[in-house]
Image 1 (tube, one colour):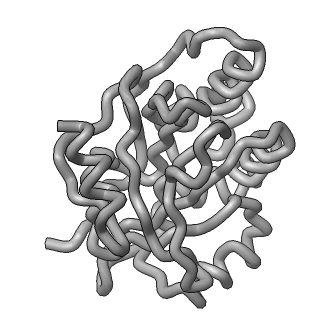
Image 2: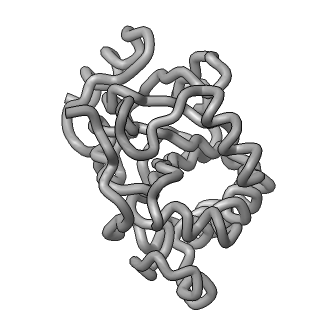
Amino acid sequence: MRLAFATLAVAMALAVPAGAEQTVGAQAGNFRLTDMNGRNVELSQFRGKTVVLEWNNPGCPFVQKHYNSGNMQKTQAAARADGVVWLTINSGAPGKQGYMTGAEAQAFVKKTKATPTDYLLDPKGVVGKGYGAKTTPHIYIIDGSGKLVYQGGIDDKPTSDVGDIAGARNHVLAALGELKAGKPVSVAETRPYGCSVKYAD
């Protein structure tokens, strides 16, 4: 099933068909999306590097918690300093909260001083559903071999309170640190929290 998922994904022009949620320890499904600048980006082009996928909806209070505090940007910067690829994905459908055009996504990245490797647009929600992305934010980490090694929340404080960030365990940085040290990810799956992804009906 996953092989078919990946094969069909590569064959399609812009997005991946959904099958089931991704499984930790298995190969992550490949996909191709258009970025905020109108360029096609395919997950497989980053093979050999660790990749973080971050689902985003700038209208969500939980996303605002991590962006307004600078926590998401700090996490992105720390990851990228270690050579990690960071792909922010917006699966909001047109007319729904969080949906953005490419120009609006560019403005969001500039305004928040975010530093993702790229910001990808998934207005039909095909990739989001293929990954089983439920919330914003929802984080996935894929190792250099293409295997999914983490999925879940950014941290262990499922609130929209900025004050909770200081005492939280940042699951993303913890997992990336373990990968860098050549260790298995000790907490490989957690419950994501945030707003529901605003998929098309």
